Figure 1 (tube, rainbow, N blue to C red):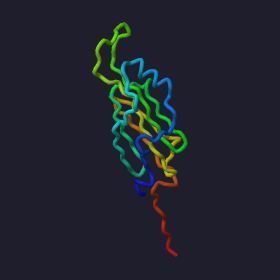
Figure 2: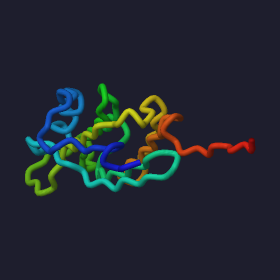
Figure 3: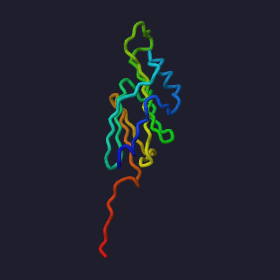
Figure 4: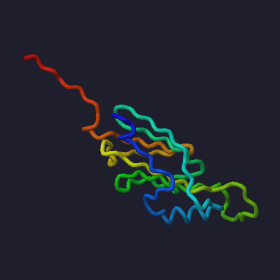
Length: 144
């Protein structure tokens, strides 16, 4: 399987879905946020079973992360925030609380209904299985 046919990253700036307003509000509530979403760096691995995506999302907690499939697109969105007490008021800030967004086009060779996601230490791990018909299989040969 050629990787370019099974996995395509959407071009930066290409809008896949409208921003989830709750995430945008959460980013604003946590402090200054960028007006343009930040593309989180990712590593993508392939094996016979499917793809594994590792996305670096520092400062994003589970409640500020959305991973969804929208049509043929996988969308990752998350709002980072610095941990501060509710009774504190920001008077000077250099830490930027970014809003991360990354989209990928999923090929028909993948099974989006069985995607597994785990967030640990600021790294999102997605396991995206290949559809059964796309997995390599051995053909038994009979003797005539």
